[in-house]
Image 1 (tube, rainbow, N blue to C red):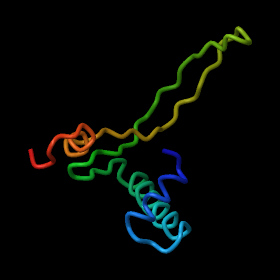
Image 2: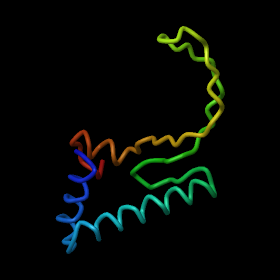
Image 3: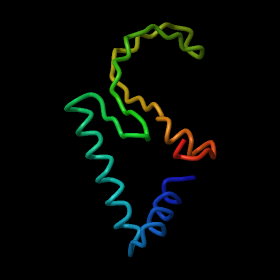
Length: 97
């Protein structure tokens, strides 16, 4: 599913008037999530999953086209681990179990 298909799905599911309104609501969710991650480093959504910031160490990578080693700087990445409720929904099991 592409981003546009997801926005249309969200619009239809929530009976919104326009794609623009649906996109604004989705963007609002992501901006709030990213701001919370900046402040706390971890966001837990019960029965859905955990978003957390992880530090990735710097490492040495060899580029095959140039045949030289390049050092990639340390950075932070966002990691998502699905919760039990979300896994059950995706796998078709009952949510109440």
